[in-house]
Length: 217
Image (cartoon, rainbow, N blue to C red; front, top):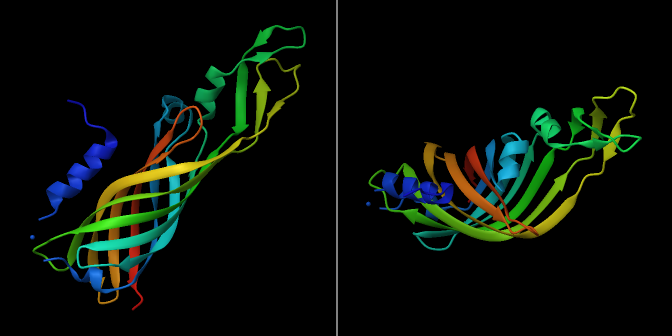
């Protein structure tokens, strides 16, 4: 049986969690994080764009000892794989002939998400560590930058490709851990599989994030 990345994320958090909840539920937390983001779906996303950079933050509000609500803002930028995209793209020459592409500059893909998430804090025997599972919903704005395409024929002028934009409802599921490093600061490690329900085909990616959580109350 083949497990999806989302299933692996949830199973990992379940296996690493063990039996009372840490002190994270007692405090209002401010989050900052950064890391990488893997393009997953559709297949062209992973084929024509490289692993992205992720930067974000949010606020966590305790509801009970076991549940926490968070709001998360995340910026992700995926650089275009110019070599791979050049192989896939063809140009029409001045006489209608088909020409290959020598290079592509630009066409990076940016995803900005604003999510509301619920976190279930897994009971742990170590009060300095809090494992959690999360799921959430929100909005995603996706855009590709303009690009300049150069033909293999030096007589042909470069061709400009105008970028595109889309916005869609999105969902997330994942998990992670928060570890005390001081009375007011926690180290956070998480992986949140995110799906944006864009037109035609959903856009899916898997951020792998390292960050800090600051107790503000």
